Image 1: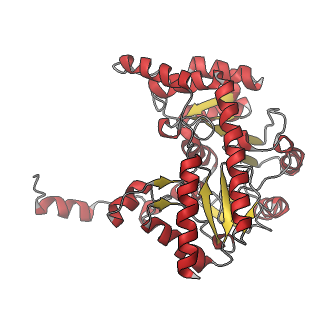
Image 2: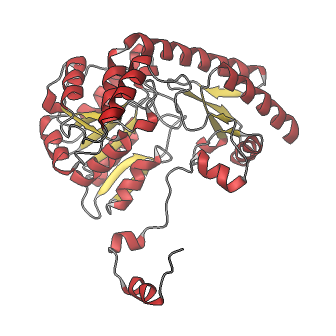
Image 3: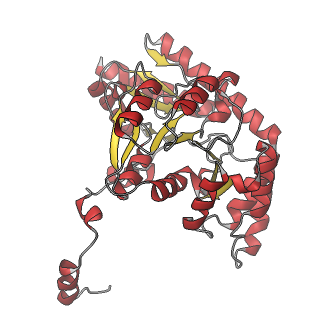
Length: 376
């Protein structure tokens, strides 16, 4: 065991951290299922809270990743050249309009870093994806949060707040996390077009593979929008940490100035490239997710509950009350079922359940019914 001497404590107590960091509370955007297992001393048998794919990864991706392990003694390609070339062809954009990094979470931090000065207003939805807020706070920005309207992001409210605060950055997810709701592509396009010229919109499209056709919009590189996508959801590569942004070349060139060029390892690069080419596998995953969403909706109806219509790989079950939702979540965890709930009312009246495979869904249903009987 290493012994820490009193002199080290004296040094640390006199050490000065930045004023931004000193003012921040200790923050963990997500408490992972592993941490919950350590806290409770119970194992989680049904992991359907983090919106991970329950349907594995492409066999082609698995083969490519296994083969790449032999080369882990070497650094990755810092330019992500082959993957970037393939993505550019898929989206019909130029290679200098794509930035690849270690997932959307990493890209959000990079965007905040290149746009937000200390004290700058940044607009988002109250209760939306918390990692964006985490980065804004970490870089000293000032969050301007607009409430949901009927469980949907309030596009007009976001636009009004951008204009009234002269914000340079606004964030929304379409489809949304944590509610699963969405807007048509033309509505998002109209929102982006209405933004002031000095404002940038981040449109997080992590769940776009699961959305209906009307939610899509052409990938036309607009100077005022940064579209972010991930390999964590439909591709099932959440643990590999890889995602990308599509944006105007000026935005991309500034992201390239600050990104960690060795942040996407060789195994992740190989897996993403192979998965991108395996469209049959991705199509099958999407079909299974849509079927699972419908299964959840029927189940909720049979229980006399409402569910929020979703375009993602999760469904929100409406428990009508935040305290009731919290009780259900905690009692499910005691039964080895991991789900989550939105953080802010009134959305926190729901529990959010990832679409699992058939076995996971049946285990969840049994545990959920048992909990409802217990608290009724």
